[in-house]
Length: 210
Image 1: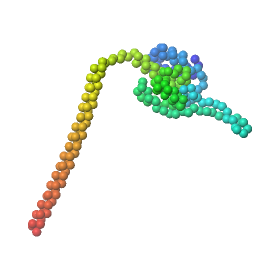
Image 2: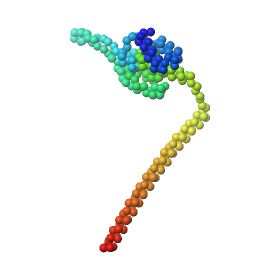
Image 3: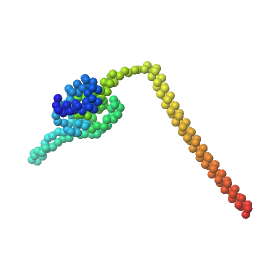
């Protein structure tokens, strides 16, 4: 195992919670399939590049055939990929080739388990792949209970009754609020009418005295 592979293995174990908290078979598979390449592009460690890295070559002039060194960088985009296993979005930098691979596989949860560790070649991809495999192993150990169709229908009916009760409660609250606002507006109109009547009576009394 190369130095880069050993350092990557340590980071994977540390991010996953420690050596003792992971299945031994999973960590052996991670150790066996880590990439042995010693050099990788720096920003590729923080994303999913699907084997696409910076390339080097020559730029040849059309007139004299002069050669000058140049590089070709991959097309990297920052995307939010939704993970159904973790039930949240993953903000990650991916290449367009990796996006096509993810779409072809059916999502990030399907792409990472199907891709070998030595082909992912980035620390972030290896960490997320190990997390998803750990989640799959935990789900496999869980006991799942199934309800008969009659029980499922009763449960769905209960949820529907709760939703109907909430809607009725909100409707009654809106009606009470509207009624209260109408009563407030009516009392204000009565007070204004009483003030106008009092003013008219005062004016008539003054006219009679004159």
